Amino acid sequence: MDINDLVRKRLEGKDKIEIVKKMGYQVHAKGVESLNYFLSKNLSDFITDGMYDFRYSAEEFFRKLCEVLEIDEESVNKEIQKINEIIIKRRAYEKSYIFVNTNFKRQSQSIFALAFMEGERRLRPNIDNLLFKSDEDVLKEISRVVKTHYHDTKGKLPMWGNIVNYAYHHKNGKVYVFDTDGNLTEQEVEESLATLSVK
Image (cartoon, rainbow, N blue to C red; front, side, top):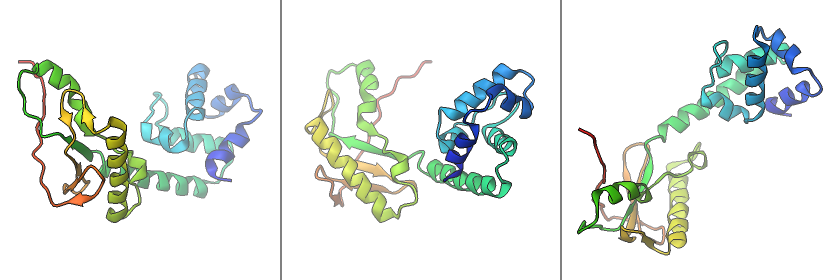
C-alpha cells in the first residue's frame, strides 16, 4: 500500500475536526477545508499546487497529517523526495510546446481575430507523458501527439490554413520538426506570433 492510500485508510471513520485539532488548527473549519482539499487530490498534485492556508504549506500539511496519523517519518521523507523530483522534471518542460505550421501569410484577417486564434497554433504536450523518458522516447511521444492532432483536425486549422508540419521545442531549447505523418525531418520552421498589447 502506498503512502497516499495509507493516509486515506487511517482517516476512515475518524472525526475530521479531531484530526485538525491535533494538527494545531484553532479555526477548525479552515483545517477541515484544507483536509477536504487534500482528500480531493492525488498527493503529487496536492504538493505541486502549492496550497498555503495561513498555517501550513502543502508539504507541511502533509507532514503534520502523517505525524498525527502515526505514519513513520522515513516513509514520508521518501514520498516527498519522489514528488520533488517530479516537480523539478515538470519545470524543465514548462516552456516546451509544439508549433503547428501552416506557412500562414496574413492578408485581410483582423489582428484581433488572429490573436484570439493564436492558441490553435501552439500545442502543449502532456508533460506527465514526457517525464523520466529518454530524449528518444520523448520524441516518439511527440510524434504520436502530432499524428493524433493532424488526424483530429483533418490537416487544417481554422483561419490559419492547411497544416504543413510541426515544430517541437524541447526542454533543452532544441527544435525538432515533424512532418504531418509524425516523422522527424531536417526542415526549418519560421514561427510568427499574433499578439495584442495595450499602450
